[in-house]
Image (cartoon, rainbow, N blue to C red):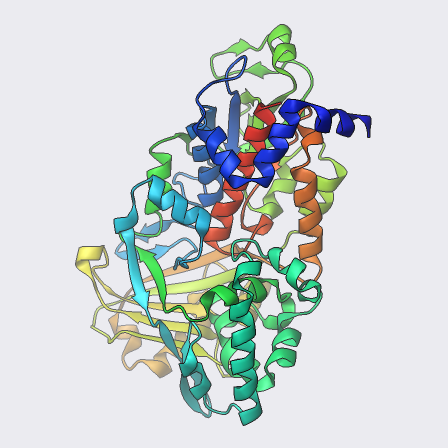
Length: 503
């Protein structure tokens, strides 16, 4: 308790606390190039997804020496692009929502406005045994025309939309836990319960559930209402989402080009050290005197045994991986990391030798088959897609089946019969097949997760940690299950590190 009181009363610690509370104060500090004694310090960022690269970029802008370590051969994580032969596909994220404040700041700083390609009035055909209807990814008055909605649910939908729109200023779409202050029950209720209570069961089954199953591979009874409550107020009345010219990975590539990024550098462990640790980047050991002068240091050991040291470490890997990397975590870290869960996503991409019309279909729950999202993408050689492509995303149940049967590397066998029935001459025209298995697609904000995460951020931002410098964490599991949320968490992680350099 004495340490907390001392930190709060110290002028530097007060400034650090102001940085955490006030983004404008942080912006001024970031632009302040007057280095404190011994420089602004050094940081290692583990993971080069949008969260890690954003954190690294903001710290680099503030004058810190930053190194980013990436286990894979390319940057971007789940916001990247991949290619196998003539098949081009995303590593995870496919769209950008317009409401990401941190992401929009990043786009402005990097002068990348011209890479945003607007997609307006994005819809899909929702298919069921009884017929099909159009479903909108951005809700509007046209949603009232959804077939099968009872009149009372149509009235409830209008009332609900007005309430959601009025709450726009009270929730942050990049921070799921922001909805807790407005509605504490949102963290305790499942999404299914919330929608049934707020609108009705038919709206859940024909409007909400298909979107979550087909775009996010989630069933609404597995999630709390936090994602919905924090994002929908910012979607109502909007009609545009974006994709990125040059691929979803272009922003991460632009960031990496401004930073010291080391790919093919898997990390074995992260540890906060009190004593001198050898820094084998140049074969020399850090002296005890230098370590003592600079305070506690952090050591990152690579899988080849190389040890790198820095004043701070930001862990930007998926939360379920971080627990295996961080040595001697404090109780708050350990309990948080043990609570992180992800869903899995399975996709099969087919190259097709014949042209097909563009289409996107979502399957209603209970429809026969294992495909939740079916999309035909015409060839676009100028955009690096020489073949017609067919995108087939597995239902959550089929993804579970693939895991149980050991078919995660051969998802195609689960879908062939369904596609043969759907497309005449399918086998004859398929020229390429790529099975894509993403074991950690999106973090699961299950009921109760938000309250735990809220407490974790309070712990992480506590100025009492300035001297001991524990690892700082960021990523979608700490913020929101969106790339804009991951970006916001990286900016916030940088703010924590910079606040510690002020003490």
